Image 1: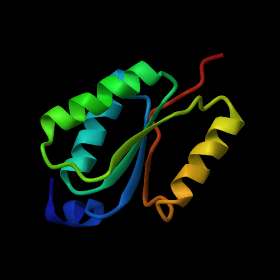
Image 2: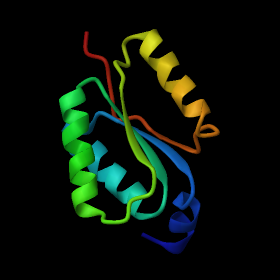
Image 3: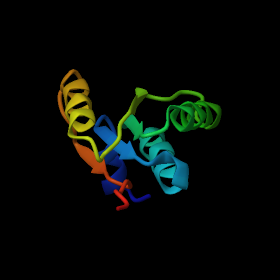
Amino acid sequence: MNIAVMSFIANRAAVDGLLRSGIGLETTILFAREGAAVLMADISEPALDKALSKVHSILSNTPRVETIKCDVSKESDIEAMVKYLDDWGGVDIMFNNAGIMQ
């Protein structure tokens, strides 16, 4: 990763969604490795637990990495996540890797 991107990510708050796919989890690891605080969001609590364990096993000194169960098809879940992030002082980076199938 180039220096401009690294300095942008460090000390930022990031939200990452849909962790089962691999892309979301790898993005979380990348953001955390570069010093971002990351909120991992997924519809599946077991997937979140597994992802958080993997992050901690790969990165021994992780910054703030937390999880929240969120179904992006439910406005109430989105509102709860936004409220949760208010305590962080807002969001600097949003990586939306989630979708809604109909």
